[in-house]
Length: 124
Image (tube, rainbow, N blue to C red):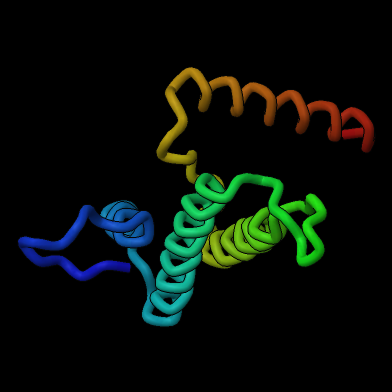
């Protein structure tokens, strides 16, 4: 996370997340640590995505063989960590900021259809 100053670069994803969440929700003191953990995880994800964009999904191994970039697994783990923290804060339903209204609507429609399928399968 960045600190604000006149000559600092743009705010990090974590900083923007904290600002948005504080505008939307009131957090108890014990939830503040979870909010900071989510913001830190977002910053780490952003950093790894930038590194992956530079290095690519396939890298050379120690003997010159092609291998999957370990950043892919690390990103998956960080995304799961973020999801777990957001669930603890009970805000996992937040739509990603980069989604358009049409994408959010399609996602909601798909979620409703999946819930209906699960309800039908379970006899609800």
